[in-house]
Length: 158
Image (tube, helix red, strand yellow):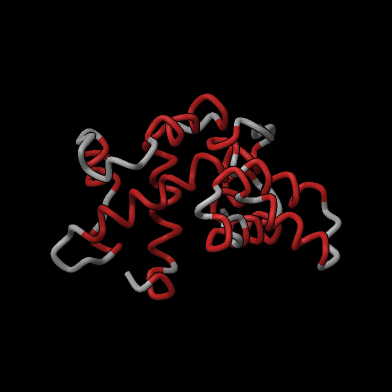
């Protein structure tokens, strides 16, 4: 999310916080996906968070499950599109012989992209929204995400 904020010349700190916290309630809501993000937004408000952009972005993350709080700006669409993409990139890394992000290229992600049975749970249509909603061609969007993940590969253990 920070890399996308840089790309759009937006607030890296805010976007990074949203990226970090958007799944913060997952363990408590995984059996009730319709409640996912509602808990996190509630917790943030209880802790004194007042930035409506952060709360709205967190809530928009669950749009795919509930149809509520649709993404409406670059921050929210960036979260929506990149969430599935990071999982796909990790899956591509894990099938590499060294299991490292350093071995992943945009082309290797695109090759796996076309194999619908590979990481079948990844909602590719959600990632593809990057073109219409963010104005970023798919390959460029993958490149931004991949380079960002490679930059923190030690933290990710990949």
